[in-house]
Length: 222
Image (cartoon, rainbow, N blue to C red; front, side, top):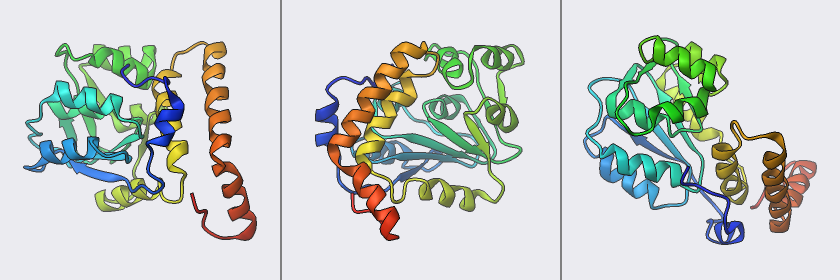
């Protein structure tokens, strides 16, 4: 993985005090420039697709960029994503999928197998690969990586954007490396990373502000 936990204080210092998740429609004509611009900003990214013919992005570069992005990356999918788009969705830390949506994956040398194992676990990833490469919404939810959207596409996108509202940007910056590295990691090293992130979070003062805002029934001011 290209997103590590080195220089965490520098990571926090460069994090804006206020962020808004940026949605990138992979099916849009300007998907490449839009995603490139989003990767240049330190804000959560939401990849979206309604299925269809897919995008014509430089998948290798954008995949690396998404994995190295300092903030969480999530996805919203309605329909079937295949080819380049399906690979990019594997860079998401979590994904909201319509009940009948799916990812259609095939080996292309971009690390799909490793990413699929990271997201689903080895057993579930093997079932997908040997089952033809189709990852359904139900299988993604069963593995704990995906959630099935109960409303329409717009409702799912609004829900994904709403998940970041009111959260500490600096806590989100500490969260991303943990999401990428703790999956499959032995408990001992994972706890070391968690303790480091926990201590750094308290150095920012954000946990105290969050508790105070809860007790005073107001929005926190991170």
